[in-house]
Image (cartoon, rainbow, N blue to C red; front, side, top):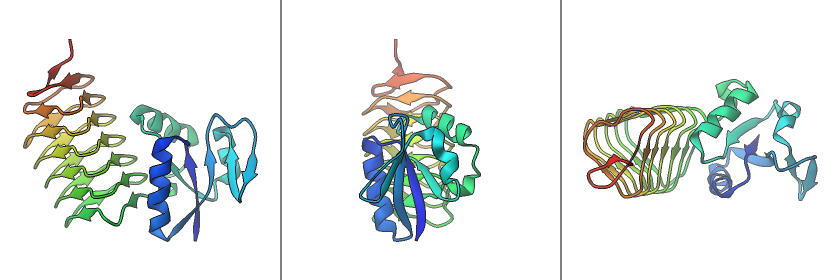
Length: 204
């Protein structure tokens, strides 16, 4: 089996680890996290500081941190090729025809991704998210649990769609934007915005 390190050791890492173990192609052999000041090994699992990643560069990696911009910062710090970051898809997820999913992206349990959708690199499609046809999700975005992107929606880089939110057809949401949990987005949202409510409006 291929060997993989998880970068980050919070709650998100626990969920990703479970998906990896269902994959039957990769074996988790360690965690890299800034909270570890020196290398240790317990039950065959390596725990080491992120700065030691060069010692393990012959292996694979997945960045298991929910914060979109921190995922990007770590990816840039590592200076490793994209092919070192495999994507993982939970076996219960439904993936339509002509869907493209980027490197380092995780698709969690009971997610639906419909036809002709593009999902970028290092994204999170969280539990029970529903992605319509012809959707574009750019790099380092996070689609939270039970959120719905209807057909033709575009989601910018570093943007998070909050849990239980709905985005109506063909709406374009910019980069680095946060849609609050339970919101309904019915019109385009520009970059660097925080919106919430039904219909979603900018936070004052």
